[in-house]
Image (tube, rainbow, N blue to C red; front, side, top):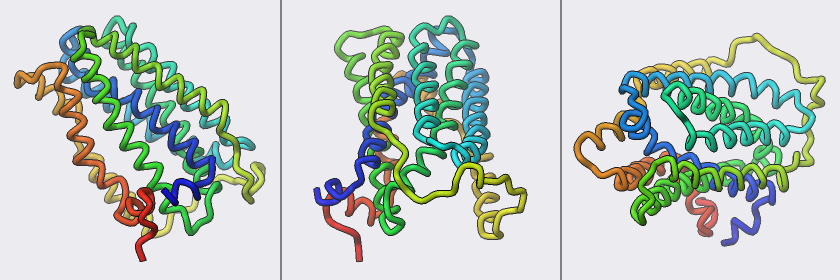
Length: 277
């Protein structure tokens, strides 16, 4: 594929890291509602509390991490911290003794996501010319979506071949997570690009431009009305769908949802058809 050959090494490394991380995350996520309710005895309300707290924390930390990324001399170290924190927390899911521990694990996992997202995206922007940003982010989203499909398939396979305990599946999910962290530490480096010195990055309390304010307002309203997908998974289990088939449903859900992650132009570029004219 011509486009893959033309991608900067940093973009390919970040794409593989995202693939591995999403495989790990999505091996756990579709089974988490069943684990909480059926094995740990939590109720649906506590499940909603976990997701609300975790996702809210991720959003707030992402804002702070963006400022941190602007001031950091080496943003790759911030990315490493984010992935390492999430990986360490996720690896503990197999040993969670009660619902409260799951809340703390999910919270730490999402905090790690919040820390890594802004500096990772900034590194991607600096690693490629502005004219290629759409292709670069399209490729990254494609790798992300691929992990979101592969993770549940692996979880379903493990359950189908006789691994009946969810904790065992969670333990296997630690493997790609550790590999992702190792790849960050080994290969990810700050790109050699012109950027402001860290001491030049200043706090600004000026309101965003009107177009951005409108976008954020719409995004806020849609976020308020959005229900966590874990309730769909719990409902599917309540309707009698076998545990081993729940990840397959999640795979189908991700396949249907994946086109929103990239446009036709990025799809054509990633798979070698070249940019649309």
